[in-house]
Image (tube, rainbow, N blue to C red; front, side, top):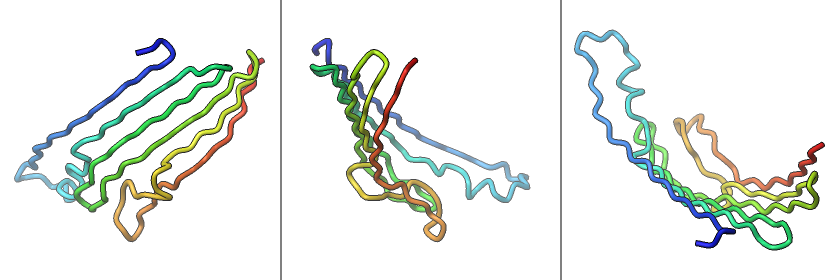
Amino acid sequence: MRPWWRLSAGLNLLRKNFTVAPASTDTSARSAQGNDPAYQASLRSRMDLPHDLEFDIGLRAVDQLPLPAVPGYLELDARLGWQATDALELSVAGTSLLDDRHPETGPPATRQEVRRSVNFGVRWRF
């Protein structure tokens, strides 16, 4: 690795084995149990480039949800920042760049989807 480049990876695995006591009166327990992705993985890169530029990119994969069924997804986020002065930073960042939208949770009838977005930023420190 180079001192100007940092790379990181992550993996979360989840195995579940839930039971409800036979005498339980909680009627919602069975429907809410275990609606989690079996895995979430990420790969992130951050580069300090010449001329006070920074480039960050991240890839993430999330497994499907079982009930209600929500498909798994793969997404990419990226950011380019420029430290114009000690006090002024300009940036452009995009999230969910691989698809124009994707669902993350909820039943199909009321499901809200995460949309691709691009943001421009100005940070002034004083």
